[in-house]
Image (cartoon, rainbow, N blue to C red; front, side, top):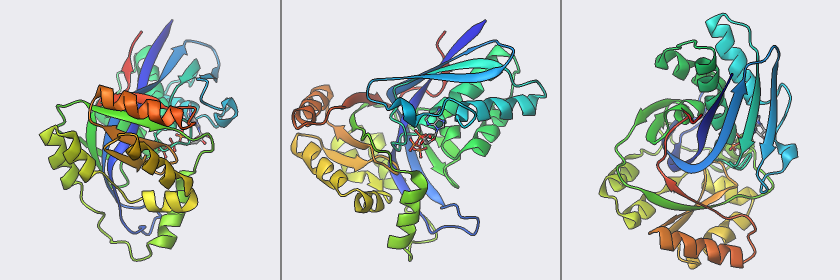
Length: 299
Ligand code: ATP
C-alpha cells in the first residue's frame, strides 16, 4: 500500500520584512507563488519510520539529511502524535527543488508528508488542523499545502489565496552553495536596524497580478532580503544583471536566496533567457510556469 504526493517550489513575488519581534521572528507581508519545479514523495506502509532520498543531478546528495533530521520524519511524527497513532511508514523523496535555495524545498516535502500520511492512514485530518500542524513545523509549510498564489502574513504562516488567473514564465538559477535563511535574516538585522515595524505592504504586486501584464509584475516585484543576500554573495548581483541582459524582464533573489529567479515575458522569452544564462556558463538553469497546485496526490 503506497501513495505519492507532489509538492512545488515557491518563490516570493513580494517579501516585505519588518523589524524582528521580541520572539525573534520577523513580521512578513509576502506574496508566494508555487511554480512548476517539484519534489515527489512516496509513502509506503511499513513497521518502522524511515526516509530515503533521491536527488536530481543538480542537487548535492549530501545536502539532504537521510536520517531523523529530515523534515519529512518530523512532519510524520507531528501528525501521528496529533492523531494518536504510531508514527510508521517508509518515505521516499525524489528531489528536484534546489536545497537551501530559498525555494522552500524542505517545506514542500513536509507538506507532502502531511498529506501522504493523512491519506495513507485515512486520518481525515481537517484542513484547519493540517494548516495548524504545518505552521508549527515551519513558516512556509502552510503555503506549500495551499499552493497557487497566496499572501502570507504573521511570520508567513497565515496564508490567504489571492486572485491570480494568469500564467507567468520564470527562469530559476540555483547555486550549489546554499545560503542559510537565518544567516540572511541576521544580516538584514545588521543592515537595517531601523527597519519598519510594519513590513512593506504587498498591494503593488497584488494589483500587478490582476493585470496579467508581465512588465507590470516585473516592476512591482520586491524582496527585502535581496540586499543582505547580495551583500553576503555579491555574485548574485552579477547574475541578476546577466539574466536581465539576456532578455529577462526582471531578476530577483528568491526568498533568502541564493537561487535567483527571472520573470520573462513569454515561453520564448524564458527559453532565450535560459539559453543565454547556460551559454554564459551557468550549468543549472530551470524553466517553470506559475502558479501551480499545492501538495496533491498524484498516484
Ligand atoms: P526556505 O526557502 O523555506 O527558507 P530553503 O529552500 O532555503 O528553505 P530547504 O531546501 O528547505 O531550504 O533546506 C533547508 C535545510 O533543511 C537544508 O540545509 C537541509 O539540511 C534541511 N532539510 C531537512 N529536510 C530536508 C528535505 N526533505 N529537503 C531539503 N532539505 C531538508
